[in-house]
Length: 490
Image (cartoon, rainbow, N blue to C red):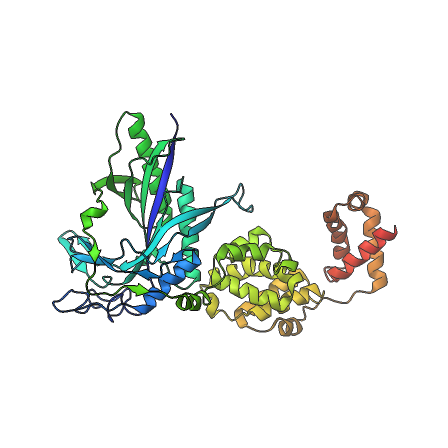
């Protein structure tokens, strides 16, 4: 019998706010233990919660970014459980009236090759709700210590439908979700800092069966790669159990990404185990259309929409970029914003040249120097000016590499560098250039025949000998135009 995997993800994302969800205590990371606390965080007698409006703004933005329906009214509930990481012995969350319902995450699966776009799919969401984070247990040889710095931090839980069918789809889902949230400035989604955490519900069922199988929840998936690896491991484990005649037990398992193994932690809780009831200290929240409209106006273009636009023809507000460039630029909002400024200054016809310099040369120099894009001396305007000099034939490609290195290190304008170093392309006598072109045509009959039969790239075989005769100083644009004129007349 053939089986298929059914996967649903529960992703917790810390919202980037200055204060915590229900108190003015500061939110942050890397501070000394138990210094980001106050009576509300520690649940001291008489302390009452007050809602953080900025956190509600952020989750509404997340919902709009992902196409969710925003509830006109939502409420707060107490999720009751006894564990040291929660000083109140309950967590303020949302149960039956979450703020965001529905929506979807668009994903792109790996293509047949690195330079080829893969299949796009839409993974439906069940809900997004807002809650407060819990503290952190630090385990050591002598026991466990509790740090409440994280407790009370605004946390949104993004719950997918059980619509993922493979570990690779789950990996693509998390990458896409993370990109959208970072794009909108809702969170930095740094998994090392606990700002993005994921639990996976995994089950298998016979192909064609509509009922869901018994699910197993995977915990402690602390990197996107470990989510993929953990799910692949759990699918294989469940298949082995079933094929051996065993039965899958509903449970929570701990996955160790370093060893690639998992172990059972506990039987899985059900919703009634938490004894949800409305929080008596917090009023419901009403989200009117004006509130939604204000936040919608602050949202950026969705990442995959931007990728499609970057690849669209110039006539459709696009730049005609190949997938190899668009797929590198778009996931980084800062880099793609930088590109778009430079492309607009250079003009649509030179946008691909701008993209090539940014993806290949700029990123290489940033990585080698350890300099962030925001701290770099080079500017979008300088890249635009560089590609204009090349397009005009004032600067040859090999000399442009030297100019770029100077631009990156000093921030000097490309025209000034060209003048200072004497790198401008030398003007070529038109008669002499035509003579070199005729010699190349006469000596390369095969390239001539291929070009005349419609093979554009064959012209490069004729340009090489001309540039060699000119000792690399001929204007490439003039060479191209002269060769085409002579071939057309011959």
